Length: 439
Image (cartoon, rainbow, N blue to C red):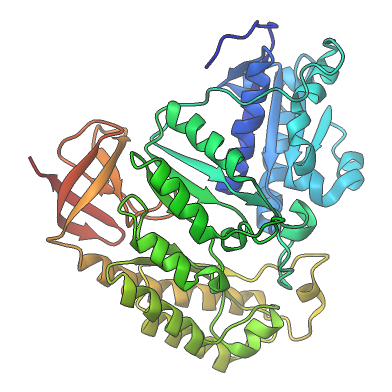
């Protein structure tokens, strides 16, 4: 990180929720560091604690509130010697209502104002700068990691009937190619070997430009420009998995053959109520199209159980889909009834106990299907990015078939962090793999 004059104040971050929030926290921290603040790993010893909240569903909101109240209870904050800032999705979703309720906080930073974090923290601490200073500091440097998330867009225009994202993040807007290239170069300069491209809807990238582009063009561009890096694309809605995108993945060895497609359900009736497209048959056809071009492709999805009006027949169709699709990874979540969404007021809300029972049944079924598929990797030779060591000293990494934070890891007998090594898979246990590094 380039040298900046210290102002003798420190800021710590507590990040809730998804990888997109992690990116936002990193960017706020980088701006603050560039403006002279020290970034602390110890929230209880910092002058300012920023809690970057998640409010996608009720459970996430509750976890974020717990984190905020825990920070408010720190001796340093309760005594007034340190300050609490609430950032991210909760201020974006609840606005002035949140400010009225959380009087313990010294400031609020909704998603749309995160680029102004320096000016907001300056104001809380009474730090004055020259006019215009400290509010648009360029991003330089970063934090060492072998894998890094890079956002390619923000917001969403889909308005799925259960989802709060458009109300929190606003309308969809793609980031420019120059912005994305610059961010990739920045995190690569800090040691990242894998770049995970993320957004609320990655498949729509470029469609809103004056001269429209596409995710396929973006993937081909970054893969050719940085052949030394792995690239992985997450959160691709089914409509975004075009033939051109599949071909772009297949054509570049440094792009992971990994398709993260949130189908959410298999019943056409339920998908229509979700304000989504598709049927079980169309989902299966898409999976077949991917695997026809890339036979060893890894496929992940997320599913919602217990959506309003979901009958036993709808749920049975969802179970059949999980069995027939033969996916590698499946995340299953019970429907969360969120105020402000259209689904909140739909009739035939499913009983909470039924939602939880169905969620667990799908999870158990997915574990059986997915672990059997992962076991077929035994004997294969794959490249593995060495990530580090666990507390007991065990070395681990991730194959291209394993996304950070959501899938399993590969345990290794040799290698150094940030190396990409050739590995023979010797065994699997559910979602984890064990392998021998080949000389």
